[in-house]
Image 1: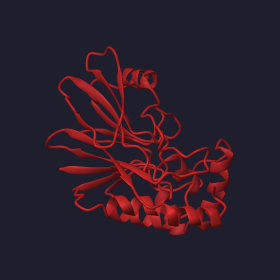
Image 2: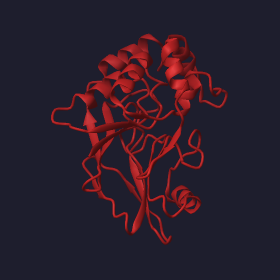
Image 3: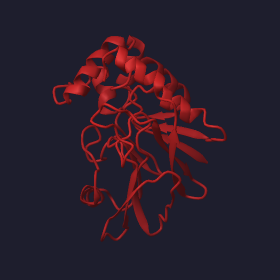
Amino acid sequence: MKILVLSDIHANLSALKAILETPGLEWDQALCLGDIVGYGPEPEECVQLVFEVCSVILAGNHDLAACNRIGIEDFSPHAYRAMEWTREHLSNSSKERLARLEPFRKTKEYCLSHGSPLDPIWSYIMNGEDARFTFSQLPPSQKLCFFGHTHIPSFFTQEIEGGTVKEYYGKGGMHVSLELEERRFLLNPGSVGFPRDLGEAHNSWRLPRAIARYALYDTEKNVWTFHRLEYDMGPTWEKMRRYRLW
């Protein structure tokens, strides 16, 4: 089975559609690790499309804020303003859909978390030290976890017995062989809508780069592949300027 893994779409419909309409891209199941809304100008359209395409959907902190399950007092000024706008422009039915989501889910094969599985709403896994602590708190049987929240494609791995944590940046096209008999993995596909990694980030939140990030997990080969896609962000950028979201 090929699983399409998406995260941190943030109401960027252009990026989401660019991925889903990529020529030759095939998948059997799609997952969303949260933050469908926030920052971007098309929250309603993104919620509808994600619920149409994805069979498993997590709540991110922005999703929970949009349906008033959490407050926005701790949001950055930019995120705060965007969330106020999002709450005004998201339909009640979409808010109800988001309100039913949870930020963490566990299956026999893997766990899914928006942020760190230790605190899936707020905590980040940014570096090897964060990953080491996360591994130390998870049971040894939990060998595979997908997460988002940082907007940075990356993965962390440690031998099952413990020891040094290795951390890697997820370059586009990178294949990761998941040797689950020997190691455990924390994997982040990066952000669909607003990447923050190595030259693909926004320049002080002024100049958006037209890059979308996602991943594919092949369960038969046990291989995770990072993907990087260039797309036309013009329509999204113009709407953000019009709605004063930037």
